[in-house]
Amino acid sequence: MRNGGFRALMAYRLCSILSYQMVAVTVGWHVYELTRNPWMLGLIGLAEVLPYFCVAPFAGYLVDHLPRRKLGMVACLGLATTPLLLAAITVGWLGDGHGVGLIYASVAVTGMVRAFLGPVYNALFARVLPREQFAHGASLGSVVFQAGLVVGPAIGGVLVGSAGKHVAYFTAAVFAIAASMAIARLQVTEPPRQLQRAPIFSSIADGARFVLGHQILLGALALDMFAVLFGGAISLAPAFIKEILHYGPEGLGILRGAPALGAVAMGVWLSRHPVERHAGRVLLCAVAGFGLCIIGFGLSTQFWLSAFLLMLSGVCDGVSVVLRTTILQLATPDAMRGRVSSINGLFIGSSNELGAFYAGSMARLLGLVPAVVLGGCVTLGVVGVTSWRAPKLRRLDLREL
Image (cartoon, rainbow, N blue to C red; front, side):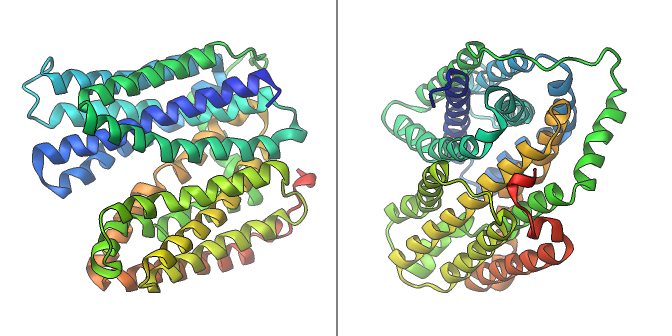
């Protein structure tokens, strides 16, 4: 934290996450207020994920071939565009404020811009820290990320309730502009550019081949993706509160915040005690622990036990996120960081949305408890398959990278 460049990068990450999360909670309230239709809430995620998937491969290419700091500044200004458009819709400057088509179009802008934020962060991360500090930096980055996931929705909800949706949107825009200013102050040397650039699709394919051919990196990404995809029990928390735990609406906030609380605590601990030896085994055990916590949550009928199990799942997930991020930084050549980070985003970026869709579908077919327990069991199966098919990951020592 004595590194000024690292502090500026953390400010960029925190402000961009706060802006994104404030918009997410406010636009959900906005759409449901207009439609009273839960299906329309699902379309918000779809409106963001589809543009993200389309833009992400090209975003990685641009991050590898254009000045990263300037690209991050432009991406943050683009992030401010969505809340400004939504604020204009709310106050009636765009349309009559009763249609949702413009809202979805504004959310699509966020999907396109978000494709740049992760690759820019990962590329600049490797420029502001020496390699021996990557594990410490990844832990602190995880703390900042998880803190933003907790604080952003809380600020957005308070502003919507006390001052109105338009104030929440304008505040989100201010945070996005602050992120742009933070990255503008970042003093970092850009890597040398190649005089002859490969064709764009060939360059993107090079990044994909690198990831698919790197057993350790591919195993870590796949492990994290499938754990989030099949273990997404938190998306069913509202139904568990009402049908299983019989607790009031305030319990939903506790359950939603419990995993992030565990992840923040683990991130702080790992920032002082980074894992290096037996990192692969620790990663596999952490994801297995996550699966066991999800199974326990599905079987629990006591509110505080369920909250405790979700907090433990956040502890396990915090270990997984920090180790995956560290592996990504150590294993990726600097000239390829943008493309590899974009592929990481394709693996991880939409897992929460797809996991929520999977959990809801299985709950409709099997019921709440069987759906969650099955998801945890599948997560354990993924750990077993990964351990078998990726022996290099199982035997990984971070010092070897």
